Length: 285
Image (cartoon, rainbow, N blue to C red; front, side, top):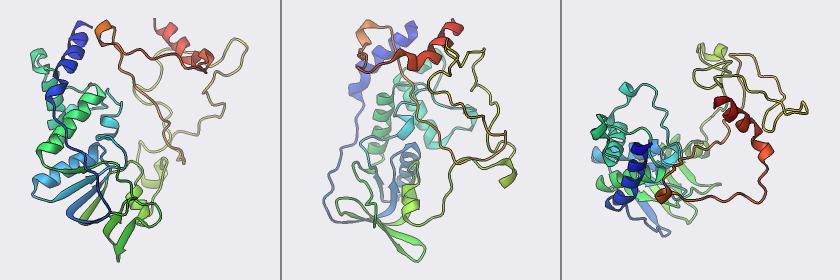
């Protein structure tokens, strides 16, 4: 915990040392690039960096106001899996985060767990150093935002009327907005094992690290299911579905009084909605 506190203090002391790219206010016009990347998610930022380093003239368009997607938007505890397979520009990012938190003093080069605003500042700095043209608040026009020649995208138009031409377009959004607008076929949900012969396809009855380590009752004292628990029986393991992942949040908390930002209790807060969590915490303790 002392190390965590020092890291938090170091963050606030050092944040001013990280520069960020200037934001551009685009006016209705026509812009031409070698590569147009739509979506400043982590993959979009990595693609823009890699293409720029290869001498391409690149623009990174982001509908929102942040850079990094889940990586800098609250994921915080990176789902790293096997660290030996992470390399290239992605590894550069995690190494820069490691230097920011002074991880070498602990014998580590990288930091997989970091504060979202720190990660975004570092990613923006990397984009600025590479001279990537980053444009925020550039949402693609919904109805007629994509222009094609045959099967090839030649331009996309954003809501303010700006036309972005490119030799190559990269869709780095999470939902595939650019691909959908261009008429690419798509699917969602989980494919069954039978569809492509993938042994880990479809519904998973159990997966490592994603179940409670001990039994937690799903019922309240009156025998009713607790809030947010579905009464529907889970589909057979390996079967497909058309479901999408639920939104969830990971919070970064500290006990350091100098680094606390209190969050007030919402007016409509109902503790019963979180009874399952309360039961889990009691069991964990």
